[in-house]
Image 1 (cartoon, helix red, strand yellow):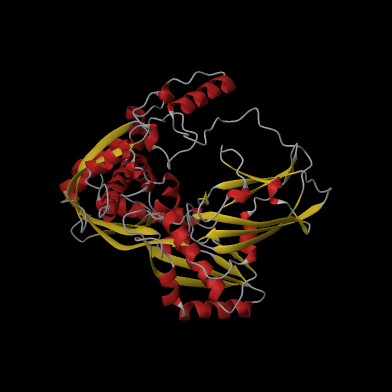
Image 2 (cartoon, one colour):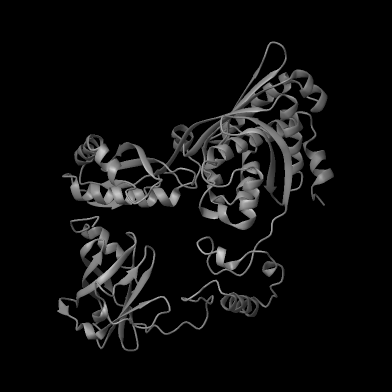
Amino acid sequence: MLFTKLIPSHILSNLYTRSSLHATENGLKFSLKNRLMNASLTKVLAVSINGEAIDLTKVGIVQGDQAFIDPISISAGQPLEFPLGNTLHIHIDDHLPGEGSCTFHIHLHTQPFGELRINFEDNLNQRVIKKATTGVPRSGEDDYSDRIIQERIAFTEAYTGRKVTSLKRHALNPKQIKGNCENFIGAAQIPLGLAGPIRINGEWAQGEFLVPLATSEGTLVASYNRGIKIVNLCGGVTTTVSEDLMQRAPVFVFDNARQARSFSEWIDIHFTEIQQKAGASSQYAHLVRIESYLSNTFAFLRFNFRTGDAAGQNMVTKATYEACLWIIENCPVKSAHFYLESNMATDKKPSFINSLQGRGKRVTAEIIFKKEILERELRVSANQLGYHQAVANIGALLAGSNNNGLHSVNAITALFIATGQDVATVAESSACLTHVEVLPNGDLSTSLTLPSLVVGTFGGGTGLPTQRECLEMMDCYGEGKAKKLAEIIAGVVLAGEISLAAAISSADWVSSHEAMGRNK
């Protein structure tokens, strides 16, 4: 058993889905959602409303599309599985309290938590809930069967009055989509072009690599191809991964600032024990450090994990939660409230803390662009590019940007779509810190750092057929390849930066889009 004591009541109360308490034709219903971790119910011990014990024969449990489950039938030998994220709908017949607030007490026995006592209070919605007549069709038995997919397509066509044609023309096996997309009806097909090959002189990526870019933006692939040509003529790009961490940042709320300070000091002293508890159920998550930030009566903790070759957001969420439950149970300084994420991670948002401390891979790409190649191939000089960079730095500063790159997001988004990354993480991944220096001989020394590149080559969407093919094209699929992918992405970003910088400085930018884009 993972936990020998009761989970704090303020966490248990969050299992109740707020505002789910409704009247029904026979009584009332409410919902409990597992927000802890995978578990199973081994016994329903008691249910009471406003202090009145409810006869368990009047209680029914519904999970998904299953029939009513008799709570008396649940036992250690016949448990009710309750996976993380699943919802149980509790029905109570022949009992309808009056208007106003209702207090509930539910006493359960579970694995792995032992006995749980869930207390919550809510107002009963007297509007009787009946079966919905409109909604996206779903199946609790198999939501990826051809039957339910066709039912959803028919529903879509009836609801919108538009035929579904292109969306259902794809090569995906719906059985492979589970865990990546819900309410599946088809695929959004995005054009994919090749750039390269690009020469990477990295520690993890060494050699020449074709680069798949998924985009609908005209000139994008051509621009990166032009930059890659210049990179290769100058001997390739050198890449270095200097850090690799994924974060989750819970916050603990105290009655006063001194308690928050004492709590933070206790965390520092007991880091080794916390490290052992965090990710105990994962073979990949390894806690490296905890950063503590104190403000007002709050203690913000930024947990930093290594996550192998997975991007790791879900992995560190679970690992951090395990650690926080242990902290709440064992720390003598008790918090008034606890939230698993404080918005300080910062997940899928640009932020200065991620640029400074890193999130995902911190990777640097560097090269010396030869004077004669810049002038012959791009019609610009190192001095022009250096001056443009200095001016653009002021523009970025005035705009309040967290980086001074030109368009790193283009390469990163196109590569993320192609390789099955979490596309929303381009918000932090696209931060790009660039530096140029004109050398005495007229060459241009250029480097850029992507401080928070969130990529993985294992898990998530990387196993989908198209995305796996794109990763395999670069020999970047599976374990042991994430840093290699990060180095390739950094090299491609650098190629794109020199291509666009030269286009702006030489006034080719507009003419290129007119010639190759859809500016009609």
